[in-house]
Amino acid sequence: MKPVIDTQVSRRPDYAHADLRRLGLQSILCVPLRVRNQVIGVVWLGDSKLQPGISLSLVPMQIVANYLAQAIDRYRAEEEMADLKHFFESLLDNLPAQVCI
Image (cartoon, rainbow, N blue to C red; front, top):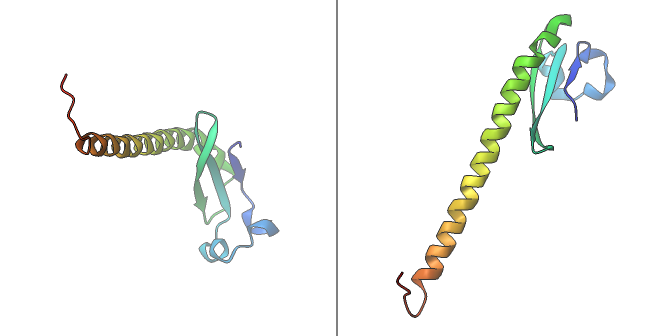
């Protein structure tokens, strides 16, 4: 998935979603949130004006998307580590005999 830039959103039938129409978007920039070549989400920027120069926002948005993707991935890893820690602590607490090292 590559970034998408569209400066004529209102003219496209596939952007006919009521919420998008209600926002009055004319230009959008969508950038994938990617971790280890896997897309985990999308961050997008919309403008109610026709913005032919919205492509200038691509580099800063890619930086934001990379930062968000890494933060989300780290949060997920920390949650998984906390779950594993709780599991192993519970396992050790419930052993019939304690092992000392």
